[in-house]
Length: 125
Ligand SMILES: [Cu+2]
Image 1: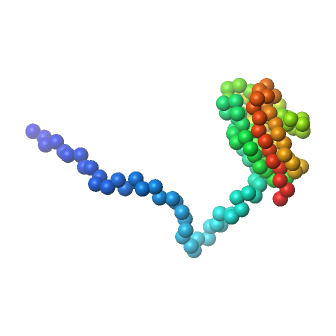
Image 2 (image 1 turned 60 degrees about the vertical axis):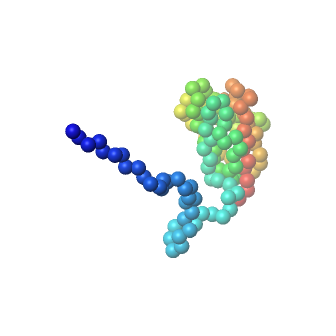
Image 3 (image 1 turned 90 degrees about the vertical axis):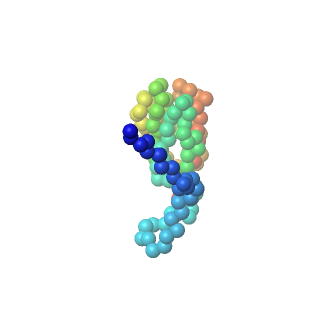
């Protein structure tokens, strides 16, 4: 008769303590993370999902680009409330990129779904 093998049980759950992955090791040549979290990005990707822009608050610097990617089955667009830009309809899994050359705050919406709204803030460097 084969002897049933007892299942080894780990005495201590090694993975239970949440340890923040702080890389506090000095002497690394890697560039340390920038302290200024507010600095606007060169380019931002916005996903359109479930009839919403994600994120719905975007900040880029002047000259920066915002890429809109549609993840919904229906076509969406991004149209500035002041008509300063209009991506036209973006089909599923397609994208459109808008370049912002002027500082300012741009509220926009989806053409077919005006209840979808979001804001791009274009900041001077
Ligand atoms: Cu839409």
